[in-house]
Image (cartoon, rainbow, N blue to C red):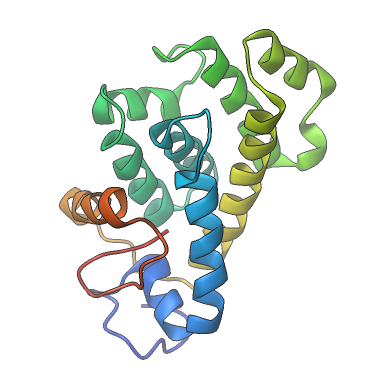
Length: 189
């Protein structure tokens, strides 16, 4: 049960979805940011960007966001949830590209403190082929998900325990994106 009365059935609108319904005037910009960062044109795939979001959310121990974005990443990566789990658990040994591994190291630093993103981390990402836009967007995805995670957990929202709830949301997000209004059947961000 959320810390405040959201005026919705949280079992139908869990996590951030109930929050977005509660304050539609902030929902638009938050969903648009997620749409641009996770689905907009980019040399990183949508699945890779969702993986960054899932990784940061896992580090922040935000169950709703981690499970949501892990499902969204798995739905868009050929290797599915097994890869997502490995990459979120231990990026150093996960079967991912060296570039993605270096970008996850940057995301990990951002999650702890933006000041922990060092010239060495950036140089390592560049050495693996990361572009300045990819480095920029990795930092912004990680920073944004620290905000989203704190929003969801700071208001004590419900996080479903059934993985099927997140898989249903993944189908919706992959097809329609984040800019669509939240509904009782689908979660956003």
